[in-house]
Image 1 (cartoon, one colour):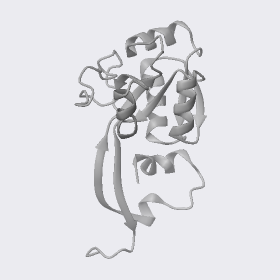
Image 2 (cartoon, helix red, strand yellow):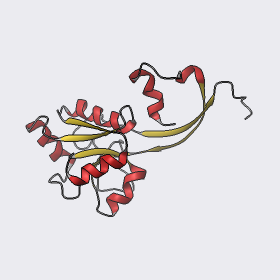
Image 3 (cartoon, one colour):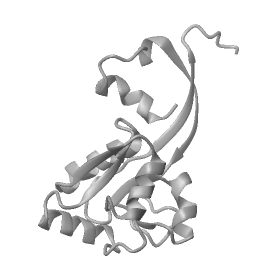
Length: 172
């Protein structure tokens, strides 16, 4: 599971499960950065530029929002709220379609998980404008955090973990 599982109950009213009553946590597997991405031919070369443009032209910049309720989606919504920008959200059912539309110019930015996007940035197929953690990524030491770009206190971390059924014996 990811943090999307943890917030689902507050976003969706008819889940077929109760996260707190039906599952027990087993282990955290890892934490990952989220990256603010644009196409390599975007006019934006820094998060500050994108933020300034979004403030100057409300709802003219679009963000591809991956899986409503996912960490990437919530990162985009938190960015909108904390940066004080009005951007148009375009919902996608997954990362692939959002990436295709980013590269095709249908949306101007997306928030993607670092494990999925680091190779694409390193191959110059995407451009990273900022990372969502408070510390810069070792993979991108020259890419500032969103916090450093002027969105004070902005931080989103993607985590993965393992849950088991509530009745799972502890020794297992």
